[in-house]
Length: 218
Image 1 (tube, rainbow, N blue to C red):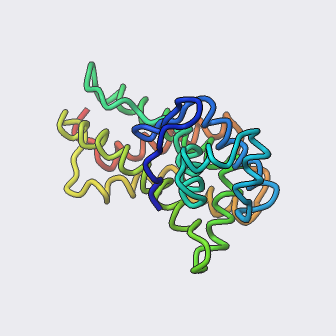
Image 2: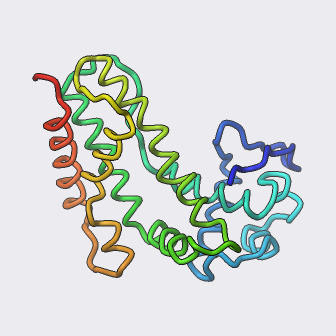
């Protein structure tokens, strides 16, 4: 569900272009903390108390509770560092490095406590007409990352480094190589999850495998 256009708040902060001010990030982190403790049944009053702000400010910034929830998911997803869309000095080696860095960031966020809790709640409420969380996580998580990542793949194709006919199919292939069964294992409580060194190795492997499938020459 889309976040409502933010009106001017009491401190002059606004949501623009999907970016959040430091104070808004504090509020969204407070929402994440509440979700870890209580699920997605939190109230606007609870958020206001947790974040030490007024309900009026929350409504000005985020529109309503669903808007706050969508912004919270967007904020969590924004912690994934995407590769730069710049073509400067782009070659196969630098493309592989960019893909590996992105995969490492994605796996790190995905296997974190907050993301596991968010995704667990989303799965639990996916078929509930009373909760928008499943659609919110898809729209502002996986689909949003796809929209941000696809231009990078298309840029690499324009540079003659990779070849594909369908951008969505290429992204889904990369998604599968990166995530594999890690997310479902995390959701089902298969511990321990991969640590930083293993995540890096798996990220580099995913980048190599993707270029093996889609790479055009050396």
